[in-house]
Image (cartoon, rainbow, N blue to C red; front, top):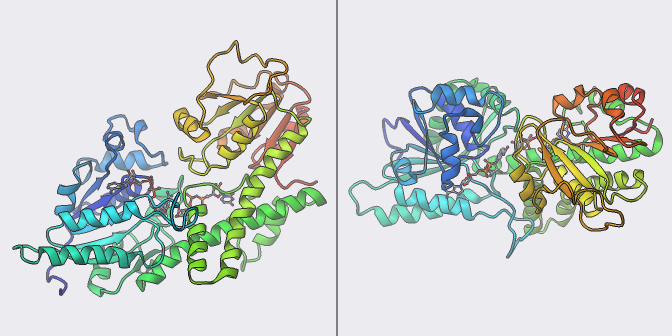
Length: 481
Ligand code: NAD
Ligand code: UGA
């Protein structure tokens, strides 16, 4: 079917109101005031939260997001559960749903579970009325566009006897935003990648972005390159973190300092200075899942050495997280039973309320397994989410919590939104780099803690001189000096 003449984008629908769909569409609405943007989701609570008058209740925390929602919501940006209606009037449909790793069946533990994407394609096939450009915004395995095209083609065939039969074009337009910096990344992207065969469709989508992105930053590729480039970008970023974290372990053994090593290698402009901060191991919903997806792809094509190479990036990350738990246990004399430990930060990085794959989850589970009593602080994460992540409820009974002697069961945890939590603590673990943790007055806290007291700083944000002055022992990731 030829591309319709005078095709003009008046309405956009985005399926999936999550960490990508919400912020991305908010920025499109802000930059394109003449286009109506409808963001739909099957999760009614999430849509209610997006429509909440109290902007601090939005389901996604991102610096700068509230202002855009305030500016555009119910003007040209709408959050709705009316998927049928929003798809039927859309000229462009973005698919921005979750694509987690498959839990069972063929490819379990590696391949992406595409059931949500397939459902979207079926919804578009069922409800679209006119020519519709379908855009893959989700991160997808290479050649997923083929699956979407097949589903849409069948819909096209089924409806050709109707008066108004829809027609479709599929494009790949992966998202590169990083959480906590999403609005800035969306407003000033390094590049916008559009993969597709039909030049009119590619140009139509490019035109949207040209409202604020310089043309030189809009890259056009074939659809498979675009899909693969997204997985590859995440794999390369994650690989740098595993590389520097592996070096941090060598630093600790040899007297080198990983911050100095990072600076020294990062000034080589062939290497570059970004993504060289050693931390508690990478988290976030995508790095692990996208690398495992790449591993699956490589194995599928019989490229076993390639698969092993990328799988090792994930293996180092898992090893590095357990290395941190183990050294906490070792430094607290091999037992955590009944010991109070303060956890600073549960989000997978600062400036987000997202905990998906956060290093804090596995590290806290390891400490709980040793019987520790954790006090977890995070300025943005919801404690209900922590309960889900740890698989145990928050502990409320103060009396039973009195560190019973000879107790050797599972530890407990409590949440605090304030930082008055250091009384009787044996140790503090810094797991997220929230700025406020760098401002804590350790001399004031030291006398409240049980000595020898420890700070384990997995983010290198604590002032080591001040901690030493406060006579607290300090372990910093990658600090062998
Ligand atoms: P998310 O889980 O926050 O949001 C996905 C939303 O889609 C959920 O609210 C879910 O209810 C909804 N959904 C699922 N099926 C639906 C359907 N059939 N109809 C309507 N709604 C449906 O996920 P996310 O973090 O926004 O990620 C989405 C995609 O973007 C993933 O493929 C991810 O890999 C990719 N991505 C994520 C990031 C990130 O920073 N989070 C960055 C770049 C790319
Ligand atoms: C990452 C990519 O940076 C985005 O480009 C991509 O769009 C996104 O994944 C995605 O596809 O989901 P995000 O996961 O939001 O973004 O956050 P990052 O800043 O990449 O951080 C990921 C993890 O690596 C965090 O746990 C962070 O603390 C850690 N990290 C990052 C380090 O340990 N050291 C660093 O130097 C940088």
